[in-house]
Amino acid sequence: MTGLQGIKACVFDAYGTLFDINAPVAGFRDEIGDKADRLTEIWRAKQLSYSWLRSLMRDYADFWAITGDALDFAMRRLEMDDPGLRERLMASYKTLDAYPEALDVLTALKQRGLATAILSNGSPNMLTPAVEHAGLAQVLDSVISVDRLRLFKPDPRVYRLAVDELGVGPEEICFLSANAWDVAGAAVFGLDVVWINRFRQPREGLPGEPAAEITSLDELPPLLD
Image 1 (cartoon, rainbow, N blue to C red):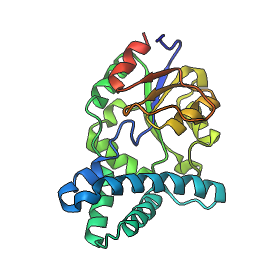
Image 2: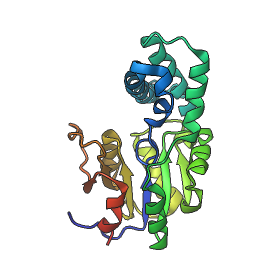
Image 3: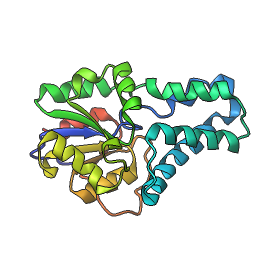
Image 4: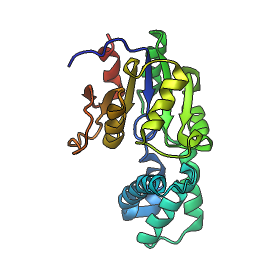
C-alpha cells in the first residue's frame, strides 16, 4: 500500500469514523435488552436515509432533528414506548465516545504540521459538545457542518466546503471515512480518500475508489510518510 503524496490536510467524517455510533445504545444495553442491536441498526439506517431523502426533496432539517425522527421510527418499529429512554438516547449523541486511537492520531498529524478538520452531516449543536467531550478540540483546526449549505453528503458541494475552509486543493486533502457511501462521494469529488473499514465490509457498487483501505486510524500516519 503506497503512501499518499503532497497531503496538507486530513479531514475526517465524524460518525463511525472518529465517534462510535454504537455507543448510545450500548450505554443502555441492560435496560433495552435483546432489542439493543436492532435498535442501533434501524436508528442508523433511518438517520442516513432521511438525510438523503430530505436532500432530494429539498426539505432540509438539521441532523439533530433527523436523528430524533430516525430514533422515533426505530422505537415504533420495535414497539418501544419509553419517552424517558428516548430523551436519554438523544442526549447521549452529544457525548459520544471517540475511538480510543483518535486523540493520539490527531495529535500526531498536528505534530507533522498537517491541518486537521471534521466534515460532517452533524449539526453544530451535536458536533461541538461531542468534540469537547472527547477532548479533540485542541487537535482540530476546524469543525465543518453541512448546516452551512442545508444539504447533506454525498452532495459534491459538501466536500467543497473542506477545500474552501482549509485553503488547499482537493488533491492536497486526505479525507477519511468509515462510511463506504461517503468514501465514494469524496472520491468522485476529487479528494484523496482513505476508507476506515473497521468491520471489513465489502466494497459498495458505487463510483469512486479509495486511495487506501485501513481498519483503524492507527494505520493512517504511515500512509503519509
